Amino acid sequence: MITLSGIHKAFGPNKVLRGVDLSVPTGQSMVIIGGSGTGKSVLLKCILGLVHPDTGTITVDGQDADTAARDAFLARFGMLFQGGALFDSLPVWQNVAFRLLRGSLKRPKAEAREIAIEKLRRVGLKPETADLFPAELSGGMQKRVGLARAIAAEPEIIFFDEPTTGLDPIMAGVINELIREIVTEMGATAMTITHDMSSVRAIADRVAMLHSGVIQWTGPIAEMDTTADPYVQQFIHGRAEGPIEAVR
Image (tube, rainbow, N blue to C red; front, side, top):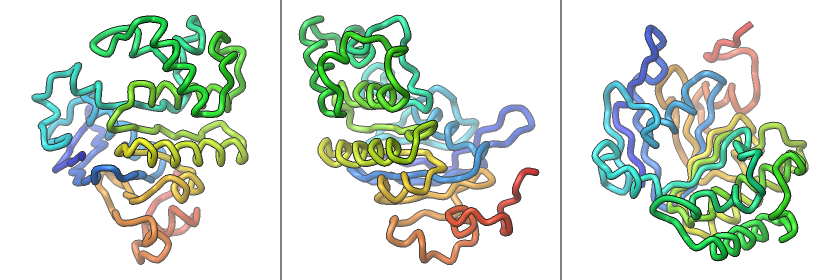
């Protein structure tokens, strides 16, 4: 579904991506791991066209992302943002139905609200949550609202940016299970970036290790623990010693 070939991106002298090659199979869940500042978020932004790579090509379902019509291209994606990124001034249902109330996906208001309430139910939130405002929700509820928004328009591809950041271990487990279930139900192609190894094990079909601007290793989740790759082994076990230098 997504293919990246030779992706380079620098910000001034800071070379963030240095030749990323990666393929994400249709209908599978790819999780990208790597330390802070390694370019994981930049990679997602390059795919979405929010950041333009300096060199390299990105194709989505065989189509060059650079030449695709923007509205139709972005309509294929849903995204769960790291901080929730809910609109404080809008009630929950309008947050969930944001894309359904405007643009090419616009639906009648009553229909959009009905879809929003159904998606809230799917992530375990009651209908009465729909008329609350984000400030009235706990962190875990906000994350669920963000997930409901990500799936509201039935996207083919869903991005998850650090989906369990700021959550306690129990709520993180709940969110991981929801993501796994929803991606499977929808048959969506998923890309997740995370530091949380419990999320990796719960969500991933395949894993890619990004370090020093390139994919150091990629493979099925079943091979992650047994690979001899020193970068993967250091990262998944949280070792101070190894090829990845800890910032002190």
